[in-house]
Image (cartoon, chains in turn brown, red):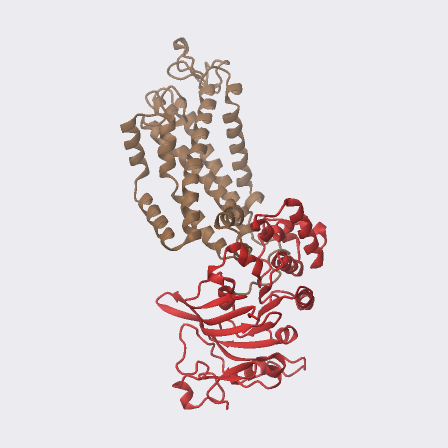
Length: 299
Length: 310
């Protein structure tokens, strides 16, 4: 079958983004909003030890359940008040951001490693290898993530390493699907054929020609996976099977706060809102990146 | 002396859905060293599949391809790269968009694995100037180049290992008319200087007449006529070749698109007609064309596959 001729001169001269109508990518306010939120969260996560006004683990039972700054009777030393054990809530929120981001990033790293390896191998080699990868993806999709994670953590006890490994082993499907599909697209482009004719090894073609050209798609998947992992960690922590106390993950903070929410509703609202805003921000950024890169690298 | 390319009874079909698409059906030919064989035919006649089989990108279902006496299937990838190189049709998809021009041209040298960095850099700069690009261009990305410049890069990449054979798969059909001539002249010049053999695939008869020493006409996966360029253009024998030649647009205003008497149904490679596969469109078909398979009738330096020619 002869190669279909693409419209000559269409690819470079015209800027694809300008013709796409409504605001997309970096031109959209949502993307910037997401980027700012993710930036702040990343900053808090990295510099948490320098930022926290108090030790997030230090208890002071004399100062239990102090109210945050916008309510009457707040203590200026504790801007967001204290929790049921008298720990500074702002410090725990910042430290919790570190834990949540750490889990999000490491889980998506582990799952990315698994998913991208499988997807690229299946998409590039095709045939039997691809059948095996598709079978693995289907098998993985048939597993209920929360249930399996609960069972594993319940059986083996909760620790952060275990949580990251468990979630990493469960969340690679989207990486695999996207990298498989994009690899199949790129594989059939002429520059891959040219590299093959140039005498390159398969490994070299994969790492130098294919992977860099699907990377932008994978970055988008990674942002969405980080958000998903953070939410799942929060859910597991809320069920008591996530990170072990006294680590202040946001999900755990919500879980610990639920006993007090009747008389101190802010104590559950603060980590809840933080979680909501962070996940929203990551998703907005991911959508923006998808529009940005999708427009530029679509073959 | 062994031929540069020897293709023997090559066939390739693709499974599409439930049916099978016959792309190349029992094609045999050879190109002597230093020759240029132009392959012409409509879209979907199997030209590009043939090119990919010869390059070793696709394995044929049956038959074999020999490059300078060695079977392409058994060649080491490095040795194969030193013998035969491609120039693809679309210079917008044949260059990795994330790689600098210099590294694109260097790729075949790097893949050899035995050359030093300084030698590679020197060879790449030489090759770039050879195809008419400045060394400064080497630092750019493909998106910063025009179509013609990109095709020059593709040619530089194909020739940087000094192969003996280049397979040009419609190298000019994605380019502006003004640039086409430059690229064709560059290819002709390089062939003369480096003693190359070309397999030149095109649907543009004028281009083929310009560059080829011999022409093969493909129809639905088969070579229906083969002859030296001058004879093919002066005395075409196969009715399909005649129709192709008649379909060339003339610069005469007011003539419009020539009617070549082939009807307006496109050939369908998933549904090959019985007998002579050209008979449903052939203006001179007889009833026996639908049942009898036409034999190959050899001519000096070529031949024709038609029941109705003597």
